[in-house]
Length: 75
Image (tube, rainbow, N blue to C red; front, side, top):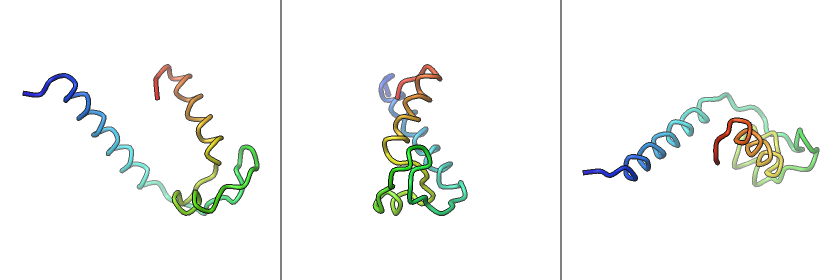
């Protein structure tokens, strides 16, 4: 019989799978060479790993932290 932690873990895994599926469905444009927020160069490895990337790691992280803070959730 599954305990509450098993159920929570299953829910987290399902949510992750759902989010990954949604991310793959979005149309992908060309990656930016420079961050649209701070204008720093986006490394080639990041552009290859994330087709259509528009922000550097730092700006993306800041945006996610702000979003989590405004929504009252934890990352």
